[in-house]
Image 1 (cartoon, rainbow, N blue to C red):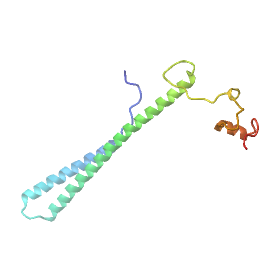
Image 2 (cartoon, rainbow, N blue to C red):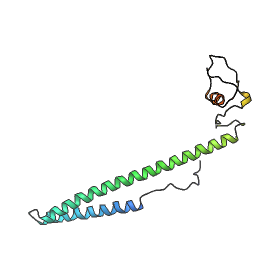
Image 3 (cartoon, rainbow, N blue to C red):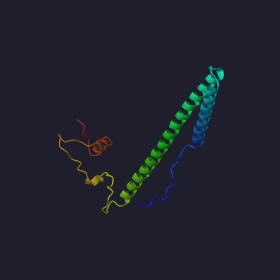
Image 4 (tube, rainbow, N blue to C red):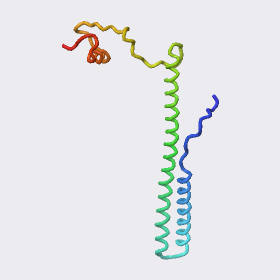
Amino acid sequence: MAESSRPLPHRPGAVSLFFVAKAAVFAAAFWIWLLVLVLDGDQATGAEVFAATGAITTTLVSVVLGARLALQRNAAERHAELKKLLVDISWNAFTAAGNSEAPGKVVPFPTLPADHDRVPERGPGERVSAFDRGRADRGGSGDRRR
């Protein structure tokens, strides 16, 4: 089956991808700076603590932003599939209404029978449908409430 000519779903993330990449670059820079400072000196200085803090923080930020980007893309794909399903359902309902006489794959929606098709007279023990109750309340074929 050939692909349909429907437009591609919205794929969020150009800006989000930029920030993920930016955080990853900063994390890599902090890790490299920490490695250089550790290999050069014998004692831990304030610069090494700052580099370690920056490396850990930017690494966590890039992981969180990457996970958020992945969730957004997944949600966008699910949303596009849901919209496609709703359009297919509404199209099937539309075609079912027009093709109710012809046999097909689509089952038409049930409709109310015409007023002359209903049997208005019932015995005292028989059930009354909701449609007939409303009709009796409007002053239909007599008072059925006892």
